[in-house]
Image 1 (tube, one colour):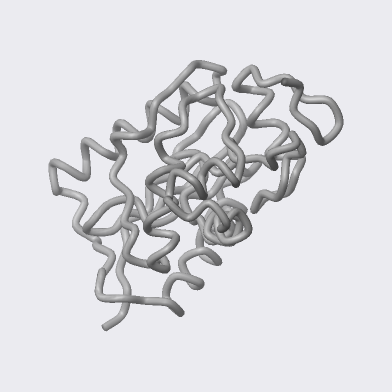
Image 2 (spheres, one colour):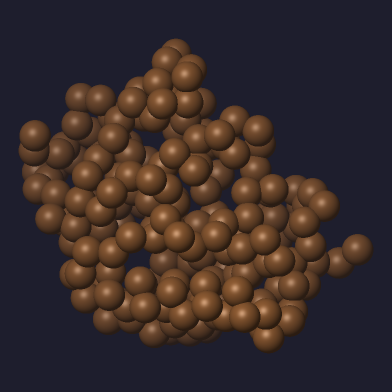
Amino acid sequence: MPLNFCLQNIFTKMGWVVAAWGEAGLVALELPCITLEEALGKIGLRIDKLKRHQKNSPLYTNSHDPKINLSHHVLKEALISYFNGEKVNTVTIPVDFSFYSSFARQVLPLVQQIPYGKTYSYQQIACLAKQPKAARAVGRALQANHTPLVIPCHRVIHHHGDLGGFSRGSNWKHKLLTLEGIRITSSSILI
């Protein structure tokens, strides 16, 4: 069965964000791009990746579902506020975790709980997942995250303060953490 999806285009102070929604919630989110075309191209790549790993969770085209429409509104307001430098909470935005490995399905909801302006280490997330020796596996799970900001993987860093990786590069990770008021020098967090 082909995947169908509902795209949501959101203009923020930093550019165009595109979200892809499925029946169970948010499936993919692309960080701000200068043009809508660029954002649509990048979300298309994320969706193609999801299609290759399709489980039994079809994406949807019906934008008349009141629950999903409310989630669209909440996401739009949260992203506009976030890129205006306001503190936001994205915990209530439903995410479809069915496209992820079982370990990622365990880790990503934990990361979604990290508050605005705070950081956790890969090691701390591994401990919260009750697998204290799995810090590298946490990194791999976050690498698979298709919903950055809603699952704020940019808030997960190395235990010694280095930023670690990010899907859009360390410059974006640095930019997002700085926006949240976290002081950074070069590639390390000031603690």
